[in-house]
Length: 209
Image (cartoon, rainbow, N blue to C red; front, side, top):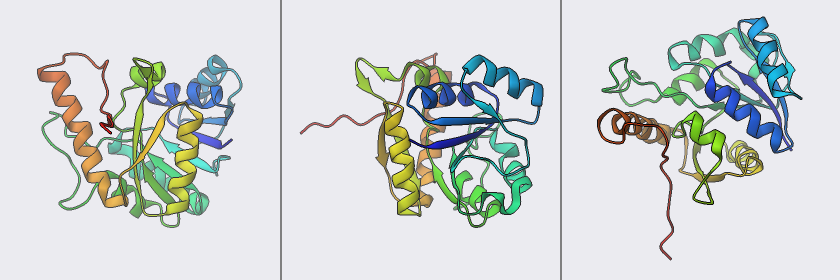
């Protein structure tokens, strides 16, 4: 199983930590507020607590913070992330949910990769809401987790981790495909706002043959 460090203390961080522990992975919780990090780790049971800004213990580091602060958070770690797999779960949407805030032709994941030279950034989990991730299945079928990344070995490790959560990894290609995944995240928010009106759904692939 994998050694996971989760940077962030929100709902997605908690849902990922619960499933990671249930899948037999070791989990380290890291947050700017040490008291809240300890509280979350204690509630989870079995997780350890790391220190923000110091080298994460995990071989896989999950960036579970808002996109607006993601590059700055990554920058605090400097060379400590070199050689590690960094999973970017962020959705770089504008405050009005009408578009993305990334530079033209780029993606949030690509911008985070620029801030973490030497790390292997993989986009994943951004199309799953925390309540859906916590449930883990839909009508008895595993949830699909779309991934994108430039390093084949990093994607293979992320895929193995995803499978340990009882989910199905779906490789979409190299890191520039993160733009499509982030647009899919924006699409989901549009559905929540205008038609579905809740977050109890997910985007997945149904095989017809």
